[in-house]
Length: 452
Image 1 (tube, helix red, strand yellow):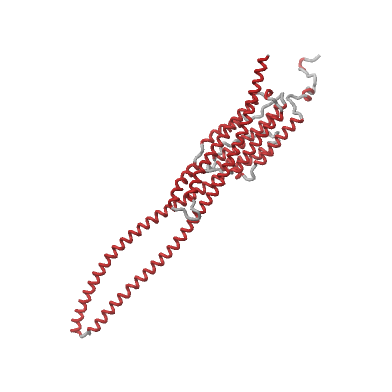
Image 2: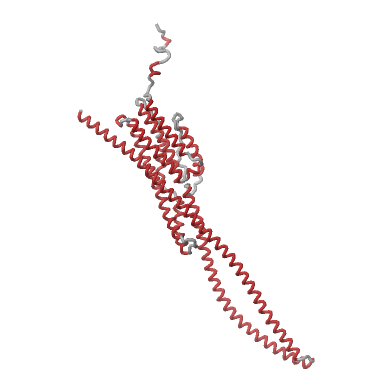
């Protein structure tokens, strides 16, 4: 007989052995284990492939294209996994359906925002192609008219490149909601459901991480970046953590600077555009200065002509005065000669010598001054020619570099846009298939209820 203070004793002092043999929840069969392992290995392999060797690669269109291709591959793989599970939709829990549908609609919204932003950047390329076409003069220097026409489009492109697109703002709320709802739902009585939930959790975690990086780079701000932890029990968790550590910290540091264009290809075009803007402004300013200098030179020539004419009249007046003074001097000398005995021939000889000396000295001064002016003009012309050649080469090189950068940006935008559209159709196809199966299952249930 048990004592009152002994309490209730279990029939099995070491615990229920049947619980150890038949634990709670469904156990995975070897086939299901193989399917799950294969899927998680493929997920880890994709994450390792996306991991950049250098963090700066994340800011390129080529890496973004690779990342979207990875998402397309993973979403195709999970559709294949659902088919191989042979889990009829009638066996799906309503929560599973809600998770899939809510996640897919948020993902479609993000794809639409990404496509819209890529389209906006592509429209900006129309301005770049137009101004490059206007400046195209072969190997010759563009004319001032060409520069003025291109300057309008150049200013417009720079203003548009400096703007932040509001079309990506909606992605911030969608990403935060997806990351907030990210959790591994517990499944107790369905082994196939357990595999499905693990697969959905993995693909949602990777999708949120990669999409947050894409939105952050295109928007030029670190706010869309999502940082969360995943359990280490998954086969892909190590690759996921390595990728997150490799890009999140560096992205936050660089994007916090608030640069005009975070995208590398876009930044290259922006640098060329600003340099070209400076060169075209300088060329226009030099043209205005040259025009003003030419006008001033013409005005100076007119003034000098008038002054010269006036000067010649003044010289003639002086000459007349000199002649009068000379005659007066001769008369005075004659009177002095009469009184003092100086000869007339001597006076004439001195007068001719003085006049000849004056005539010789004046042309020499004019010749020397003209020679100095010629040297000055020659030196100035050489310097001007050299500076013009340097500006010409600098402008042509800038136009060529901008053309190459714009071509790389255009090819990258086209390629990435195609990948985003393909990913959008993959997500949309999976969602439509689920909805069709839901309608078919509900129709079958209604028919069965009517027959009963």
